[in-house]
Every structure is written in structure tokens, then in C-alpha cells.
Image (tube, each protein chain N blue to C red):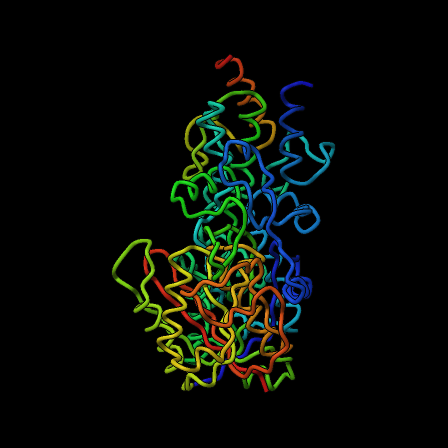
Length: 85
Length: 403
């Protein structure tokens, strides 16, 4: 499974949806993932890829980790996996 | 001042997963204490407890809920569901604004702490699940109960070790008695039966390796239990107007502190609290037919408690019945007073006195009618529930037959 596919699977589980219902254009808001759900999804991503995601729930939009869409998150994860492997 | 009645009760503990099965076990003098089952139990010197067995959280909660609910919160919600259902209450907008939740708890999410400490210390992991804090905080159970029914009145958790539930219920009583809230959910819960929880208790050397035998001359310590008890405390007129079934009336309480020792109980403190509860409830000592004892099964507690009862009740001490149901369900620490209140309700409502089981040998220092080994039928008008905590914090509740 590619990194975007794995990210979609993790976020879908968090949103209690089928992976087929989640696209790269979906926003977390579209999927009904609240702030607590986002923190849990980031934990699951960190565990799955063995990386550290620079995300502070106090300022979700700060830093260069973009969470505006599922695709943006997947791109960020791809970069982190490359940097941290 | 408003009268306060109990209109709903719920529980899960080693004796049963609801009130009926728990009371049936108490009537039959059944023991819920057995071999502990959890990881690393072979590294413990103490391997028995009143553990809730054959319990599958997935049948009661969703995966999302379980991500946020420690075992003590799960137990609390299960008991609260039963209590609210029995009460038949409907939390309207107006009522939910004035109804709250006060629960006792001592250890918080001990299993959550244990699992996550193990993960970072033993397994060397550097990342923990994001919900560790909201799961382990002592007020998690009270908060989740408030959310489950949208109760927006005063809610908090009381932590006074073994007296937590009695302090919580005394506080809830006050809220209703004083007219602040027409309805309060109250009681308490505990779940410390995990490796770290029992290991910590082992250190104090007050635990029994072979059984809980309160008041018996061969007693050799306490046995820990787990679970929850939750009650609906309701203003009498509010309950009467809707035709609610009243399980018992709460007529008074007292709270006090020994201010003397962090672990040793005090006869003077216990006696002052029992007599304080009688005074608060405007009762004469002769009115009391049954006392649910703190009765931990330690050498120190049981003789001190019996001496305090003898002091307060004088000659009547030989006529009343006093039993410790901890012999059956174990010591639920912060949740114990809540589960034990069920024995008081059974005495008042069903006219059955729960026994002190495992009673083998009389102890001259505990020379009261401890209802040894077999339940007894008796008409009781007033019952007391004692709780005397580590740290010398005491709380005694007084209940009267409803109607």
C-alpha cells in the first residue's frame, strides 16, 4: 500500500468511514474528524510510519505541516518519512 | 430543608453485574474474591482480589468510547445506566440544568497509568496514546456521566481514599437537601486491580494473601475489589410527584477528620462521626437496626470500629446488627461505600441483612453481632453506612426505610 493509501486508511478508521469514502481532496471537517480525532489520527500515523509529526494542537496551522486536506497530510507524511528514515 | 430519597441504583462488582445479582449474592453469602487475572500477576505476593470477571467492554461500549474510558469509567457508566433506567427519570432541559454528578474515586485510571508506564519504561517506547490524560484523570468518570445524560449542574469527584464514595454521597445529599439540585447522580468507582496497583498496596503490608475475614479472630488483612455503585438521589416531592419508586430515604450524614495518623484509624474519630450522623438525622441510637461496617478485615480497623460502635450505642450496641460485605466483594477503596450502600438498601427494603462471611473465630475485641456467615431476615427502620479512610477522613451516612 502506498503512503497516501495508508494515510487514507488511518483517517477513514478515525472518521468511522470506508477508505473508499475518503479522497485526497477531503478535509477533516468534511469527514467529521474533530480536534481530538485529529490528535488520535496523528498518533496512529506516527505509530504506523515510525515518525514524529511536528503538530501542536494549540496552533494546528502553525509550522509547515499542512492539515488542510487528506492529500496535504499525505504529502507531509511522505516528506517526513523521507527525512526521518 | 428538602427530604432526599434514592430512586435508582446500579452496580457492577465482583458479586454481580447489576443490583439484583449483587443482592442475591449477598443474601446467599457468596464470595466474589478469587485468583487475580492480569499480566505479571506471578510477580505479586498478593494474588487474590474481588475482580470483575467475564467482562467484555465491547458489549457495553463502542471502540471510540473505549479509547477514552479507563476501566473505572466503564464501570461507572454501566452502573449509572442501570440507576438512571430504574429511576425512570427523564432529563428535560430544565432538570438537566440543575442535575449534577458527584462521584468518589481514589486511584483514577490506574490501569491506564500502569499500561502506559510499562510501555515507556519497560518497552522503551517514546510515544503514548494521546488520550492517556483524559483517561486517567480522577474526574473522567464523573465527566462522562454528566455528558451521557447532559447533566449541567454541579459535578465533581471526591477523593478521600476508602471514604471517597461516602463523602461523595454526603455531598450529593447536601445538594438536594439544601434545595440546590432536585436530582444528583452519586456513588463511586474504583479499578486498581492491575500489576502496579496491587504492587503498591503490597508495599503497605496490610493485604491478606488468603481471604477477607472481617471481625474474625483469624483475620489477616484486607482484600481489594473493583467496580462501581451509582445512585439517583432525588428530592422527595420531585420523586413523589412523578410516582417514582423510592428505594430508601437518606436522612443524614456526618464527616470528620481524625487529624492524627496517615494510616492508623482512631476510635474517637469514628465514634464522633457515627454520633454526628445520628445527630444530623435526628435519630436516637436505639433507632438504628443495622450498620454496614467499614470492616476491612485488618487488625486495626475492625477492633477500632467495634470499640467506636460500642461507645456510641452503649447497651444498644449488643442489639443492633453490624456486618462487613467487604468479605464478599472485597474493598473497592474509592468505590466501596457505594457498593456497600446496596446492603443498607437491602436491609431496609427487603428486610434481609447481608452477612459477614468467612467468620471463623470470635474476637473478644469485636464482640458485636456481626451477622456471621449467613444472611438474616430482620425488620430494620434505620441503617448506617460507615467509612473510615486512610488519612483519618471519616464519613457516615444514615438511611431510613422509604414510605
